[in-house]
Amino acid sequence: MNEQSHGSPAVDRSADPVRDLEKVLDDDRQRGLADLNELFRAGQPPDPPLNGQYDGELVALDIAPIVTPVVEWIASIWMPWKGKFLIRDQSKGDNLFSQDSRIILSVVFPFYRDKVDHDHRTFRAFVFDTSIRQGMVDKDRQVFRIDYDRPDNPMLSIRRIVDEVVQVRGGVYLGKIHFKWWWGRWSMIGYFALRRKN
Image 1 (cartoon, helix red, strand yellow):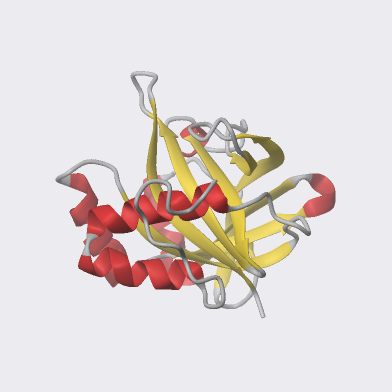
Image 2 (cartoon, helix red, strand yellow):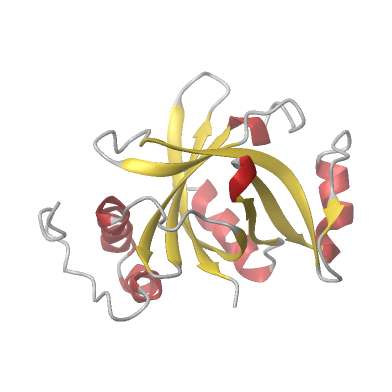
């Protein structure tokens, strides 16, 4: 698909295209979100497949008019999510969180026990399964699907999340976050980036 087909400017692939669009988001949020969508649709399933540690960054949320700015403000002050760890041969992975969030995570999810230390700064939690699938919204695209619907994850929250990831440049990946609301409707609620751990 031509990147300018919806009026969005072409993205300079010589730089990190996600970083470029973060600057657009600061100046014009609606244009930035539209450009992120175009960048995602121009991406492909990761090649080679994701394997190992990837640094994560929350790029933008799009939940609801009042909720979004509040959550983004909190995330700008403290973001415990640090990335993902993928195990290609097992088609699964989990998330990396800062060690200083362990107590809060235990309070929010008191019955969740599957936290594993990764290193002195991070621990791993919330295992997911991976596959190449049709996009939930972008049905004409193939994406790397990250599905949290597993019995070991919290039922009312984490299990309702599906992430989709595409490669937008060597070592740079853009993801969409989908959430299934309790009344049964799926929504795309935000974007994140993964970058290969150096």
